Picture 1 (cartoon, rainbow over the protein chains, first blue to last red):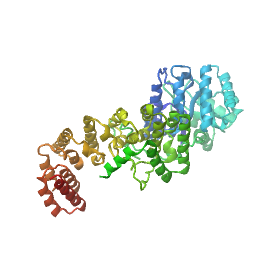
Picture 2: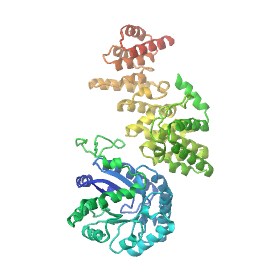
Picture 3: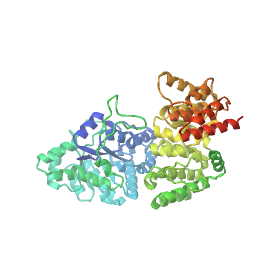
Picture 4: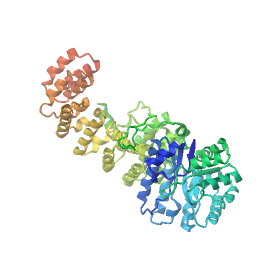
Length: 291
Length: 297
């Protein structure tokens, strides 16, 4: 069984869900992030957050995948003064919703003051509520951004056990390894990290607190990167227990700290396509499947 | 009727008394930690005069208090609360606290709880409508819930909830009753319908029955309740016909409908039915209707 702890399914199709389920993915975490173009009003965030705890969770369930999410104002849009304050004010309420397993994605993108303010405020919130925080690290000036991230984690004083630093590479991972933060790796078709490089990191640093995800979104990305990494690990000689540690147990243990990750949802293989969400179905005339 | 007595009690109850009545049931039926959490949220919100505190707590209420049905107490409950689950009760308390903190902005706060709520949260808001002061201003919210495709949300408005019959304008109420019949919600659970029945609703109900019969389909027998008080031409004769239907529910519906007609012609048929009816439930209803008809002369 596999778990993808960072994937933006609102941007993916039902074909993706079918392929993911077939490849063994039984659970996902969908962090709130940006949508590829700037949002200009708080209302679009409300609807987006509602879809993460509502429609998207339902869609996943229709393919036998347990869907959890994290809620936050993402770093990129933290820079927009038209919406940032209002969205930050919404976050505490969404963090109390069922199936919300932490604060995220937060962190630095361009490493601006506005990003830092939103980042610190939301880290404080995670600390206060004792829930996990999922931290995005920047694409540019990544190493410095990661150093500043870890410094801010220390400054805020949130327990490092509650923090995952995501999108690591060969340069940033050693910095995170010096802390008790969890280590996230986004496996991407071209950028970020490949399955082979990931296997190299696992060989070198072991499996403790190591986590992989697809970070698949609306761009060119691959929702099957967790199963593909699991296969690459097996091919490189890792045993099944090690594969399960990285691709199942670690992400679940991390997000389970929220107290909101319901394992019975993960362990159940029930699918009931006769169910509706607010009167709506994912089916288009097909025969509903029940198992 | 108990409904009338309870409604009068609700009018006499202050916001705080309504809150206390719910808290009493929550204390009796919910985990102690959940109840202390709710009390603490209410205390902090009151001392900070912050409705945001209440809204932020709104989603967590089901997790803290559970979702089980709240037992009723021996004292008179506010109308429409007997079927409250723990999460609905807790969320109603949060809205009642908001009414104390900032009565001027209760509409904004209630709408914020509804708009950003998931289905359970929306249901709690809708179920609380009848408890809130100055609730006429919440009509747009209720109308929105009445238009939903979500069967559970719609049922929260249409059944065991006095709000629609208290506040809905007639055309909207008629649509709500017909939608209830259409989606299979028993319209005898629409609180206060008897007082709001009207000729137009009776016409719509009768036409629906005609339409179903032409298509050789069944209709909900309790639809006669919406028709009985203002029966269109031919309706009484149709109900009399259904008094002898092979399906018990149809005999029951027809008997109940006839009792509301104030039409003396029905008496002889009801008497005849009471002599042969084998179902105790239908027979009791037939006798009740006979009594109602003699009361109306």
